[in-house]
Image (tube, rainbow, N blue to C red):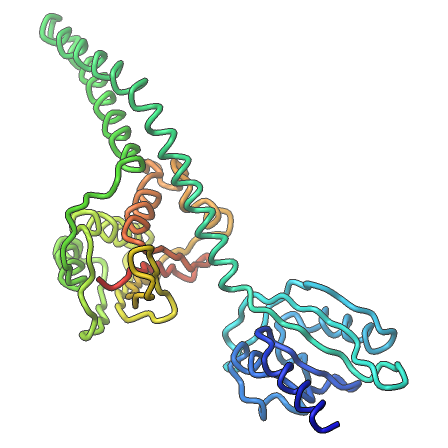
Length: 356
């Protein structure tokens, strides 16, 4: 019998998802190591406390646990938010509730099966962004020939007419030439999605790269920049010009989010939770993260869903290609971009890059 108990305890401890056993009074009486790690609490801090302390939407969870304890009902894949030990950080959670029966087949408590969905949601968002970029790359190749060639003819003809017509007509032809050039530049930017990244990579000091960008941005005077760099950061391998394009775009977006001025923090650090494997090197590489944090107007939920959608922009003179191109460049460097924002609470843009 003792061997059986040890056997079942080992199984309980080996489950990768969080398992929490709750008494009839909704007190936690047993947890496995996965639940300790998920909620960032020790086993002792769980025991004999209300299980409702673990969930942000506790009223709905309380009702469902009540149904389980009263009638043995089971619930699968409830979407909710868990609370870390600090009480301030929540995370997406999938919760299943099932009755815990005694030897007489009576409901003695409930078993909560918890699964952290943060990583899964990040993967889904990354896949969605990549699909958008890939679709635009295919579209760009098809449109380039059909648009750029006639555009050259229009611009060339307008320039010839300008030379032959009286000066009073030059104003209208200048508009044609200017707009043709603007469309041509947009087409070149669209082709960036289809072109492979420049193979000329080099060792890059990310702090030096960012400082070269800030030299120009600091001249405006209305923005205060705070740099919090990790001096132990190793160099990365990348294309310097393309990465400058990424960080210049992100920093300017942060500046534009604060029309009345404000503070932009730039933080660099090692990020051990994001590693990269390749076919050439199956050993995970450590990564760095650069965070650009502004105190601006923030981004609403509808705009957040379309941040990396090509041509979607909230700026009156924006092309809607800045962020998609930045994402494509970062992905070409085997990295990713993550944006965290709420209206009137500022925005944090995280750029993850593998160490060279």
